[in-house]
Picture 1 (cartoon, helix red, strand yellow):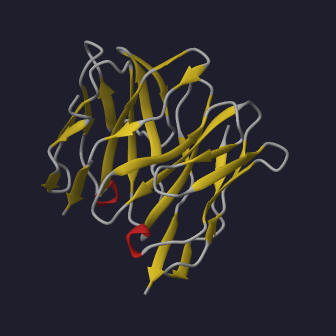
Picture 2 (cartoon, rainbow over the protein chains, first blue to last red; picture 1 turned 135 degrees about the vertical axis):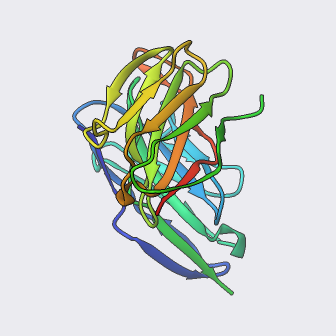
Length: 112
Length: 116
C-alpha cells in the first residue's frame, strides 16, 4: 500500500518570500507523483506532475518540485510567493495504473 | 470538453434517508474515481472504475455505499441509510489510463452532503 506524508499542516509566509512544502511518500512499487492545489471554495486543480524524465518539474505559475527517489520525496517550492497563492496544497501518488493516494494537505497562507 | 461535472452540488438530507450522486467524467477518460473529503483533510479514496468495471474499493466503503458505472460513461454513488458521519464533500475524478500508466486525475467541483 502507498501512503503520503505532508509534515506541515499550515505554513504562513510573507509575500515575496520563498516557500517549501514538504511531501514524502511510501511505496513498494514505482509511482507517479502530483501536486494539486485547492483554492478556497473551489475544486482540486493539478499544479504539476512527475511521470518520468527530468526529476525537476515546473508549473506555469512559478512553482517547482523535485522528485528524489532515494529520499522518497517530492517537495514543492516557489522562490517568491504572492497573496494569490494562498490555498491548500495536496501531494498525491499513484502506482502505475492504479488509484491516487493523497496526503493530508498543507495550508499555505501568504501574508501581506 | 466541459470537464468533470457532478450533480447535485449540495445535498441536505435527514439521517436514515438514501441519497444518490451523479458524476459525468471527461468524455474520453476511461477511469473514474470517487473520493470523500472532510474539512481540513485530504481526499480519501473510495472506489474506482476502468470503463464499467469496478476495480478497487476502499475499506472505507461500507455496505451502505454502492457505486456503479453501467455503460462506462457516467457514474452514480449511492449512500443508503445516511448517518451524520457521512457528511462530507464527495469528489469525482477521471483520468485516461491503462495497465502500467495513468494520466493525472481531473476533479469535479464535488457534491457537499450534509446529514441532519
